[in-house]
Length: 339
Image (tube, rainbow, N blue to C red; front, side, top):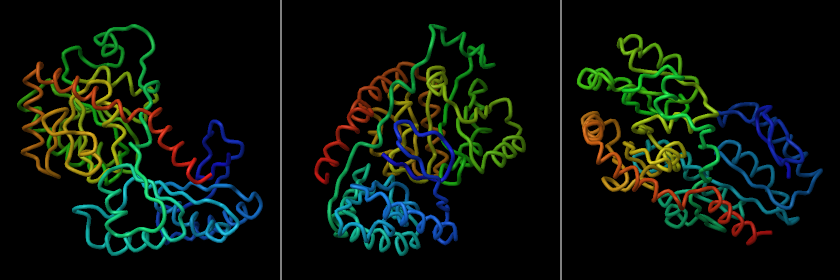
């Protein structure tokens, strides 16, 4: 198995790893370099199948692989969330829908991870194979906490107070994750509930800006920036509640991980979150950027431990279909159709 991506990280199980300079923008010149390198790889190795992920890398990889389909190479693409979706800007629909539809003509199978995207494949008559899986799969082993330390001891070791009410958000610091919305709402919340503390796990280009906003609002004592965590299971275990304010998600793996560990969650209304959360059954959904609803559901859970436990247990039960073993079996069935 060969893996091509932009970076220098180690990839387990890969026979060869290729550093291909995919750009974030579709207009980046580096994508032309990436396309040429991919063409050389396809010509040299005659791959039986090519499986693409992410919009930009998927676009140029499928273009590079197109001519080799006549020699038997199968081309698959997993969308982790189309850029056209309900409430998306008009320009997204005008740019990305025609692009994805056109690319489906040179793709043997398109794989989606939520119902809304899967429905679009049929509604807009995408060519060739259409599939849906239950996300890329959450890994229970990643969430395990080594040792037998109590939650109280773990909090002390991490510099958190035993009686803090911890609210966790797992997300990269990018515009789409909408940390700004959360941070702007913290002053009103902590004025009413001084024990609330917000933990942000992740890194990204917006992190310094969010730290500056936290400082300007004088809420630094109520916010912790954890950075990227290999031990995220430790913080999920310590937390009292999980949140997400993302503008759009394909599924929302961080939310799924928190729900799997019995955390009650309050999340923004989008297709990925709706895939996971049944409102008022295993979590709560607030309208996009609706501060009143967001604060109401946090207050509701804060003041009712019985409700937190009830919602958390329901969340755990509902996540069983999203574990990685089941996602792998779904992908195995898809591969068997083409190989």
